[in-house]
Image 1 (cartoon, helix red, strand yellow):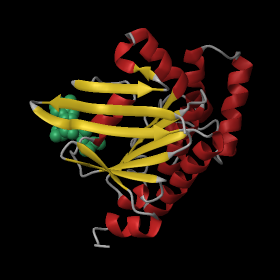
Image 2 (cartoon, protein in one colour):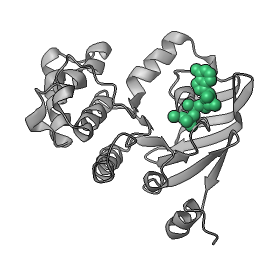
Image 3 (cartoon, protein in one colour):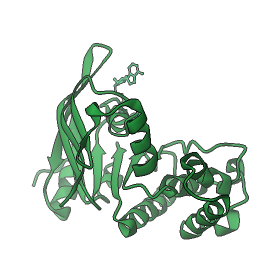
Length: 238
Ligand SMILES: Nc1ncnc2c1ncn2[C@@H]1O[C@H](COP(=O)(O)OP(=O)(O)O)[C@@H](O)[C@H]1O
Ligand SMILES: [Mg+2]
């Protein structure tokens, strides 16, 4: 399998304390992976580092066989824009743009499609996420689940190879969360796009192919097969 991403001996010191401590992680093409950990364990820090939004103190990151530490800021920005997609807990939509306008933003920035193509693509993505009727609404006229679906459409707009999601269902009720998670999984699986979700929620993590725990700055893969894995995640002995 092709590695999409590798973190090798990644260390991040924040406020004099190692939030990541020689952590290792690999994501393969088409894989969905969850990183679980308690609040404050460093999940968001890890996601920012893997998304090239923050720096490692020590260690290295590899994306599609390129060592990120060897790349300049410009090349990193290109990787980020062309190959990564981001989804956040609080959606981060632009208030004054419609749903379709929000989905178009990354395509406008990339500048590779005509205006007409960008609009069509935004409409197709909103259709796929069940939002066809809501494309002209602004974020405040949408429910939380709808806003997160718009954010997923936006994250997919530039056809990323890796989608990074930070507590993507953390602001949603249980039923809406399950629906959003299913859409996220289906949309990435269909595209053979790798998906990394960081979450404190074991029910969310259990939906991913692989589950890794972040404890004391270290990443430990929870390797048991599905049934046993669910038990392990609930803290039961096997
Ligand atoms: N900008 C920052 N300045 C100082 N400390 C920070 C900053 N961001 C995060 N931290 C600290 O780093 C640790 C990990 O935070 P974070 O990655 O947000 O954890 P999580 O997402 O798992 O809740 C916490 O102890 C937090 O207080
Ligand atoms: Mg966090």
